[in-house]
Length: 529
Image (spheres, helix red, strand yellow):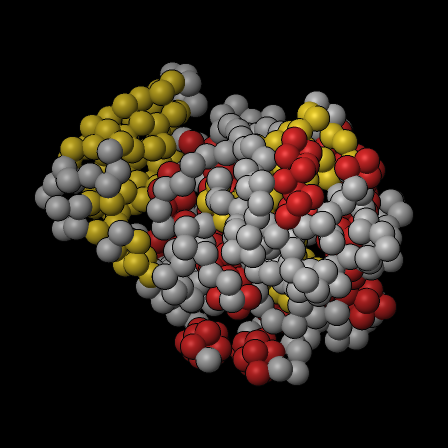
């Protein structure tokens, strides 16, 4: 009820709701506010993230199989273990293989387009589906309760003041598109849902040329979303924009997809991307992974419920990747899978697996680094019913790396999105975050930075100018200029360091406003005691 009340109030108020980062209040600013007018929406890149949620808790040990510990693996789950001679081999390693239904993922791995992150979880994991899903969606600690999601916080930082005054010329399309009956918690921002929902992929495809196909479900949550859409002019505008992109002349799926629910969602995503939609985030889902019983067919453990689900993932993702490649859009898209938890090492007597700790994640796309990050989980020679796979990587390290390496967020933004620091994992190639497919003189995300930040007094501002008129100001969070740090004309490209003293200002958040020709950038700086 708390989340529903939050959505309803956000829809009615339409105003910024402050959040706390390291004790400081962060408020969303409307586009027509003084600060909003200084901010250009969106970090300049053409990258897109596709998130696939595997609902129910995927059995990671039957997904990515430790061949080098096969005897311990088999002893722990004799009634569901995959025969060693049926495990899919991966190029470059004899220690690890995939479930035989994951031929699509095997092919992507062997092409260097799939990164496997081993044993992903978080400290003190929760075995409740609902609570664990909330933790993954909000990027919270296990004992921390948040009302906004990691993707919502990202989009809120990129597009100040949303939903007020959107669509805009700079961002005419939905910030995010997701499939389901209600907005995922991951896409809730501090003051409003940041995503737009397609409730039924098949209905959307059938009615793409007309009709009201993007609607809220008839549920309590759907009722709140319906209210949001009733009070927002965005609903009809975004619906028309999505249909226009989908039906753009010459826009069609070029790959053959399997017939399943995940493929239906990914087919739409591919066409919306190819149709020119500037949406940054897509969230799709596949249900059915809560396999306490009957996970496999007893006569052939390579078949059954879990095998069908894994085939759905592998075949659908491979078709999606092929489609993007044929469309010439694969360089722009990175995908990831996640499930709210893994399963126990030992299977149960019902031919299934019970809720467990860590599990592998897939990062896929042309720009994925490929290979395996981490090592196979260590399995006891005689597993008990309470033994779990230990965490090697916090799931927020995966989020952190995607935000930094793919969505081009700087250190300050990363703190605001993920609320603390995490390890950076080498999951995608575009580590310098240069916009792909464009010729740029500089990486516009890194024109200005400051260190230390937070600062008590003296801090050093580093900025890059292409030459010509260059302006650097300190402004308040309301957008009022407080200090002109530098205004000069330079003869050519150069990097400059400039010390400033913010010691006389009250504690809080301020902004550095940098302008050099067409390049304008705002970067927060935090004053502490």
